[in-house]
Length: 288
Image (cartoon, rainbow, N blue to C red; front, side, top):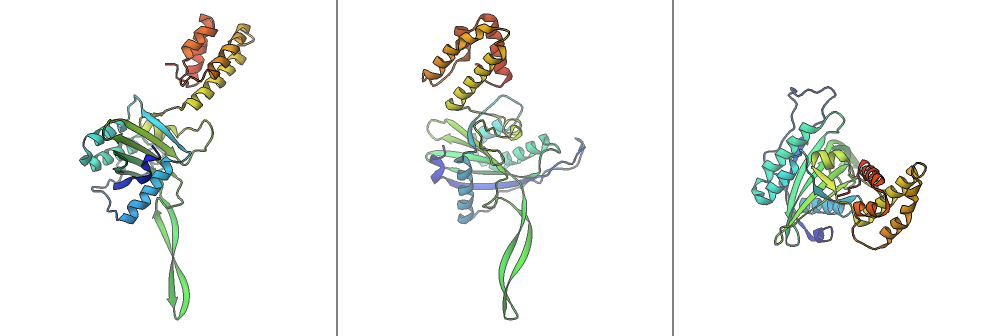
């Protein structure tokens, strides 16, 4: 997806403010998000700026493919609604911001929720961005009494500067012909480790999505979890050692997918199969 977005165009951008809830905020609180009624006005320079930041995030090593999951988030429905009727861009963005405010608590930082949309390579896309506001100063060259100087002005409502890394983004792209939906998300506050995961609140609770595990990561996780299971059970069930040849064969067979159920049935007894399956699930490794 990242390559196809290099030449994308930004059409619209809208921002809503989602304040942080103080500790002890009740459901009866009068605090509400500040919702925009219309989209922001963008000149070409701003469109280019947002395009660079969005594409840079989606193409970064912090970005991962995602997919909709079955949970209580309204975002999957809103994304589907957008691709059915893109004229609802503003109302969909308002509902997304209201949803974020509703599910946040005092642990979640306040900030801005923005939606952007556009086109790219025979497709259309919409992105959701969660951005923290920042402060800073600006310099303006001045001449005072014939002397050159710089006036310094404090700004407390900066957001999305070129150096900003405190933002999360999810981009959903639908192909014009096949209608296939692709999705990718990035979180600049996460480290780039081998098992990097986007903050669960943004990904799962708010977006209603799960990570799509790449074959490389899936194979590595499968091997590490199976090896750990063998080592943890070797004293009680020495026969688990017999699984090692089958494990190595499974890793080296160059298959694009791994079926843990078939693997377990081929190397473990029925009793150990059940224990192994439960172990994988406890460690969030899909066995379906």
